[in-house]
Amino acid sequence: MILARVVGTVVATRKDPRLEGKKLLILKPVTPEGKDEAGYLVAVDTVSAGFRETVLAVSGSSARMAEGCQNRPVDTAIIGIVDSVSLDEPRKNDKKSA
Image 1 (cartoon, helix red, strand yellow):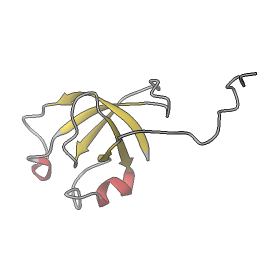
Image 2 (cartoon, rainbow, N blue to C red):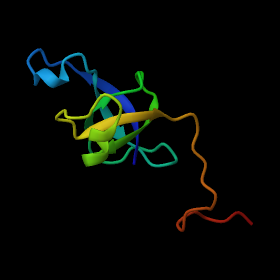
Image 3 (cartoon, rainbow, N blue to C red):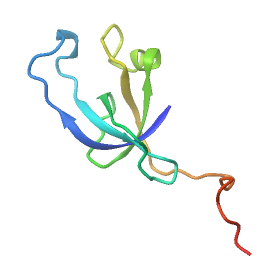
């Protein structure tokens, strides 16, 4: 799964007919702390995500199993809107407070 933030939309007036009516969003992958990671993804929105929301996305064959994406040319799909993220243990590079 991919943790990401919605940063934009894609409008395509001509596309595969199996994608008609599907909202395409641009995602920026983020760390669990919310910091930007490299690159962008275009994903089909299956959960009505909004601008700047943190979302869960899947790619590859998992994306084609998402609701409404079966038998469609989809490589990435948004499958959830994240309410919060918490890490149970500190990262190795984090400094411990004394």
